[in-house]
Length: 217
Image 1 (tube, one colour):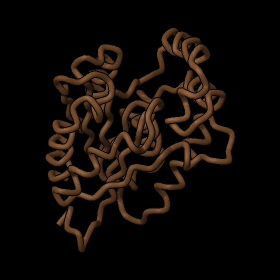
Image 2 (cartoon, one colour):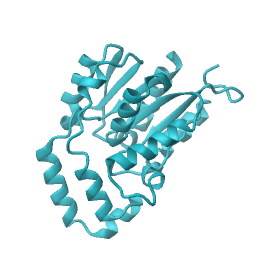
Image 3 (cartoon, one colour):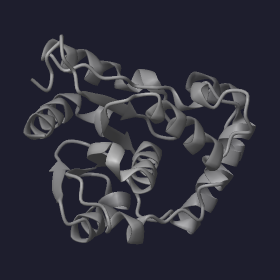
Image 4 (cartoon, rainbow, N blue to C red):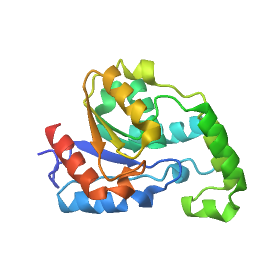
């Protein structure tokens, strides 16, 4: 049984986005638990604590977490979390049972990133405390993502992949469609009544979709 409490051959990992922390998965985790599906939601900033915060160090810390599990992984990531999941799957395809990519860009829009970083500089330092990261580290991490592009490598993956995008997430809709076209074993689902943060905007629908997808695996 994939989700039996006595035997769990797959580890389900929920990975938050850049402007979130692990608590943003609490509703999803709790509801999945009531359905007999256990999951973990690491805090990326805690994983990388004590290191200079940028994409390479966050990925390294995330990769170390994944390597600590002997079993195959079901990775579910939102935005930055999706990029990390995809990056790990490309590097270690044999460790992956399935992927779920939510609002994940195939490349970072440089104009948008530049504008976002300008806005971040105007935000008070206290606003970053809830995410468990300093303003300086947050901006450094954001800037370090500018050259990420996994589209070509993603096309080589053959693991079952669920690509989700909120119906109101116009920024990432094109990316979702392009990933679906490029990845031969993928399914595209548009989540209604949701923007970019599907785990917060429509958690009930996300739980349903995850349960169905993982049950098929």
